[in-house]
Amino acid sequence: MNKRILVTGGAGLVGSHLSAKLLEQGHCVVCMDNLSTGSMHNVAALLAHPDFSLLRQDVTTDIMLEVDAIYNLACPASPVHYQADPIATLKTSVIGAANVLELARLRHNIPVLQASTSEVYGDPHVHPQPESYWGNVNPIGPRACYDEGKRGAETLFFDYGRQYGLPIKVVRIFNTYGPHMHPADGRVVANFIVQALSGGDITIYGDGTQTRSFCYVDDLVDGLIAMMNSAPDVIGPINLGNPGEFTIRQLAEIVLELTNSGSRIVHRPLPVDDPRQRLPDIRKAHELGLGAADPVARRSDAHHCLFRDDAFKT
Ligand SMILES: NC(=O)c1ccc[n+]([C@@H]2O[C@H](COP(=O)([O-])OP(=O)(O)OC[C@H]3O[C@@H](n4cnc5c(N)ncnc54)[C@H](O)[C@@H]3O)[C@@H](O)[C@H]2O)c1
Image 1 (cartoon, rainbow, N blue to C red):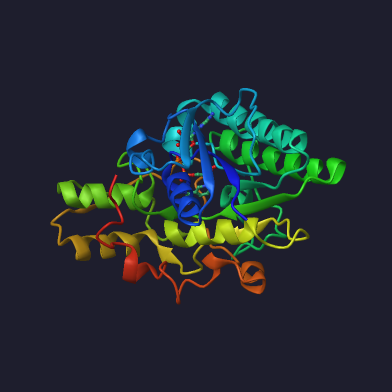
Image 2 (image 1 turned 45 degrees about the vertical axis):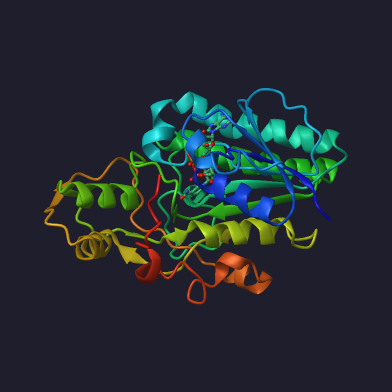
């Protein structure tokens, strides 16, 4: 059945692709965004669609909408952006979550999905990270506004689930990249590509042995939709990401090779609380048959598609 679906943060990297996919599936999409890190450009192609509407609103303000389901994505995802105004980031996560949950409750318990993050694991002592791991987060460090904000949002989701029987879904997203990434995103994929294409130095923070995994945005979107459509008893949290692991040094070398760039690799000190390792344990997603869980068969095979032609259109 076609639904009217609210996507908060719908003008960002993930939200714009999710909105496009939901429209493709015949749903109506209401995109709510304050355009702080997202842009009109990301949704320009959707604006002409009769079933798409853009609402310029901050998720921390009261939401009154007639919708049948909610994806809550509103929140800056890159450290550069979420640390620029840490108080706003924390409020966006926690008050934003409270607002979408209240809307879901007032709409007679419609399903609501929270875009949580691998950052809830902090600098993990367990590798790879299963959902059962409670994490290692510094609650007062510069990343805490995001990590603790997302943890607080998860808590609210589970409390609304227990207290009101709200059909909640929580996914923990690992590094995702693709078209509509902001060139000044500040995270490693954007940094390296911009640096290589402009011929500037490629900056590695630390010695480059720290690891990350990278998921192509379309795979993540498939996972989000599969999670939303999963059985009512599947509430999560569920890790979504690509289990292929790279060292940052390897990533820099691949970027140099594929862009044929003459850029040099230079090293800078690691930022405070930067995690050494980040790798999803996606066995749960596999068991549930969620889309993003099989990167080999899909698009997140990093060597194959990290640098697809369209991977970095802004
Ligand atoms: N991209 C990733 O690697 C990644 C990893 C883990 C989690 N996530 C989560 O997925 C979601 C989407 O991430 P993204 O990569 O698309 O980030 P993004 O920055 O591209 O998109 C976030 C969107 O939310 C909007 N927004 C921010 N604060 C808002 C507010 N107070 N009210 C309304 N809109 C607001 C922004 O303008 C932007 O359009 C975020 O919640 C993020 O925490 C993303």
